[in-house]
Every structure is written in structure tokens, then in C-alpha cells.
Image (cartoon, rainbow, N blue to C red; front, side, top):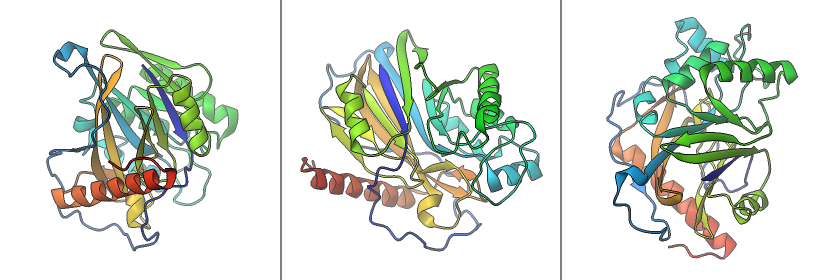
Length: 303
């Protein structure tokens, strides 16, 4: 199974106001059960699942940026698992977990709440392992903010933690219940790279970077997800940047047979939490409409 991760802006945000006020407000439902997730039907993909030994699940997160105020909050708490705690049990329940790590991690990263040169404390790697992260995409526009030294420090920490990474060269290959999953990472723009990846043999394309969740596309029977929004970041300045989705992709051998998304909302400048069913429905309805709008723009079926 070949997965391609892309860290870039795709240009298809949902039609939402960009600057609705958002602050460090109380969570009205601090510990909701993850509950059901909405599923979007996919084209037929081989035989119907009947033997659980053939099933493998992949969890996909949004942008993971434990920098800036996230770094400040975790440092003040002395808890680098803090951003991941409310969602970790749900995330690590999958067979493989793939995230977009958009910040270098190293000891001595200065805790600051401002700027666009991102870094996070090296101890955030423990948060990745706590959440069961198996592989991260590093092909994005902030991972190189501290040059070769920042890259090398981060990959050394990931290697030590047993977390694989894509986007720096060769594919990251994992054995998932006896089947190889290969991950490639690219920092590109637009539809061309997504479709070229599928035309070249990719089984799924996973996009991230806009910091807003976006719609999906099914191209030649293969799933393209354009963005999962934020998962760990400090962008509390708008409702859209506080929102994200956790995607669960279910494979029967090497065929994708189901995809579902569970919404999250960020609190306290960096901690993702699950919300109530009405919130989930609103997010998923917006995501569905964005998918239909994209299909209409591309002249593709909307059902």
C-alpha cells in the first residue's frame, strides 16, 4: 500500500468567515466520548470485508506544530504530553498513525509565543509516541526553519523513538500486520501532484498545511484528502483554525474500503479535544459541502 503525504495549500477552503473571534474559552463538553464518526461512501473496492485479519486501519491527523504558544503552555505545565492527552486513546487505536509534523524538535528550543520560525522542545516526541504515531510527514514549509541542524536533531529524536518519517528522501516503510505500507512526502501545490501520485500508483493521497480542514475527492477510485486542519497548534484567533478532523482509513488488504472523520477543537492554545454531536455534525456537513463544491468545480459527480 502506497500513501503519499503532501504539505501544501490546495486552494479549496470551505466558504467560511476567516476571522470569527476565538479565545481560550471554557470547553462546554470537556470529556465527551469519541462516539460515532461520519463515513463518506467510496467506490467499490474489491470483496466486502469479511475476515478481520485482512483489515488494517490508518489514523491521519492534521498539522502537528508543537511550537510557539504550544511550547510555552507545555513548558509551563512541565507536561509535553498535554496537547495529546484528550485524544490519544482514540488516535492510537489504529494500526498505523500518520501525522504532519510541521516543526523541528530539539533540546534548547526557546519558548516564545511570537514569530514564524517554529521549533518545539525535543520532549514533544514523547507526545507523539503517547498518541501511537508511527510515521510523520516532514515535507512542509516550516520543518526546515532551523536548517540542517534542526532537521538532524529532529530525525535523531524520531529515530530513537522508533517513529518513521517521509519527505526527506526514500519512502518510509512499515509492516502493518504483514502488509507493507510505504509513505512518500512532498511539498507541492495544487491538484497536479495529487493526481500524478495516483496515476503513478499511490493508493491514497493525504494533504495538509492550510490549517483549515477541507473537502475530499475520489479520483480514479482513490481517496484524496486535501487537509485535516490543525491538530496541535496555537491558532486560537479564528474558529476555523481551531477546528480539525482525525481521519480513519480502513483497508481490506491493499484496497481502501471505508473512510471516516472525527472532528476535534483546540483549546488553551494547543490541546485538541472532542466535542458534542452537534459540533461534529456541523464540521462534517461543512466538509461534505466543500467536497461537493470541489467536485462541481472539477466537473465531477457530487454523489
